[in-house]
Image 1 (cartoon, rainbow, N blue to C red):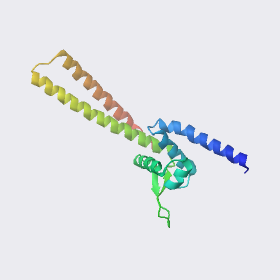
Image 2 (cartoon, one colour):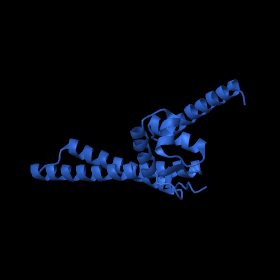
Image 3 (cartoon, rainbow, N blue to C red):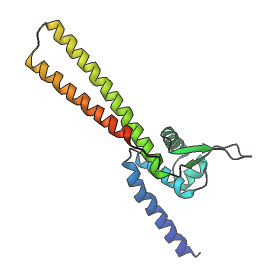
Image 4 (tube, rainbow, N blue to C red):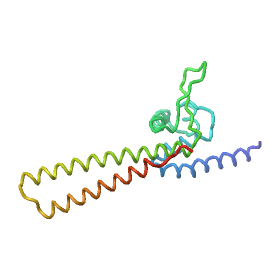
Length: 167
């Protein structure tokens, strides 16, 4: 392969990383995390933090932070190579399953947090309403809207819970 071919291949590789990273950012990854995942995915063989740092021209600290986040989301896994002391990491192969599972879990967690927050606010409103010993029209409307919001979150939770990314 000549120098020109090598440059063209590198340019195409850079564009592939850039374009697919845009898609992964829609799943809530930062641009840096998305590029790191795509780099690992394209590389196919497990990489060390040093290798990632060199490939992406970023600091090893930056790679460590990105890998931790991707590990937490279940998008990469740590692998060990016999005879080597460094940690190696590789991207999950089933893109659809990996990203949908992570995305669904984010939505389920967020929906649960919002539901809990709305429950607490509803209790605060009930307490405030009881302490004034009167029910105002404004409080009644707020109770009604909170119930609608809680129902909305229940529907979201059910919709995401029913998705099956195991394909």
